[in-house]
Image (cartoon, rainbow, N blue to C red):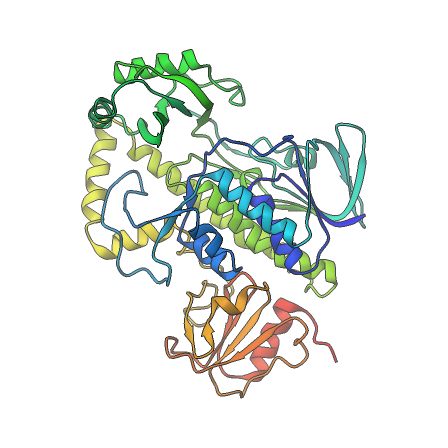
Length: 476
């Protein structure tokens, strides 16, 4: 029996495996596909995800393969300048194809000692007071203390657990793929520019060697979205939307997606959890799906590790649902709004013009961008300082950078009092850095492993209370 089984080897599952292995938890990742996918639905990392990769020492790997971007237009394709006042030391996103993101995360998870098995389809599961039993398609049975379903919108884990997935079905479908075009690049660009005057769900981005990533509205809503469109269907929709199929041929991959919005009613049931698309699906507007998934894993990993090691407070595992379910609900809401803005009817056009005017104000532009890029999240940790429940940007220390001190995934007390505070009783679980931080106008902050502020102040007794609340009983 292992500690944690993760069902699904995409970005969410691999990020979770990394978080668990950093804490010495035995983890087994089961992936249904026999080999990594070549499809690239996710196109990059948002600012919060960039921060996370820096906090785990992975950012250099992503910078080596990704291009930085600082362009607006991530909310309903309303193009505005990049906000200059975002509260981050990493004011950029990274363009990274999803297969590359998965490769980098998988490599690190394996380096840390995770086990990843491909071609392992989960067909059933059950749980008792002590463990979860997983049944595979070949009849194999596996046991683990905990299980996390990171197996996508059609999650087998969610169905086996009987967790409801309410929401709204798709109203429109969209075709997506990478394929070669014979038409001249100048002609393609001119046609795309003209079509997008009225149809914002159409686009073509060159990939080199005559290949393009293309997105085009589908003719209707498919009964089985898992069935990829044919090349001829793709051509027909190109002709219907753009008046030409651009000589499309030799597809690398083709797929379809809808605009359904659904969210699991609960992210935890006993010893089983849901994360990523298994917990929430929504339109891809704003590119939030991959990012919110790995951020789910970032929240859950250290909590599961604490439970495995026996020092998790009684309600720590329940805090995963309490914190991430509202975040998922807000993403569903903002993607619904964005889909409305992409419409061509008069009301949608008028609403788009109004919001575009409002976003000319820097404060509004920053608010909307931080919402999409994951910087606006604040967990409800009760009354207190304005930093409480928020992630902390990378601040400069006399001993380097804050995020450099977080690579091990441990909690950290950043003490600017000169050493008046201590983590005695929790030193086996919590790091302490005594450093006069000029960028922060607070005496000390306690950071959880996911980088969110759990406590602010200068009183040892209240610090001890916070340490016990989040990291368990002190050792003697």
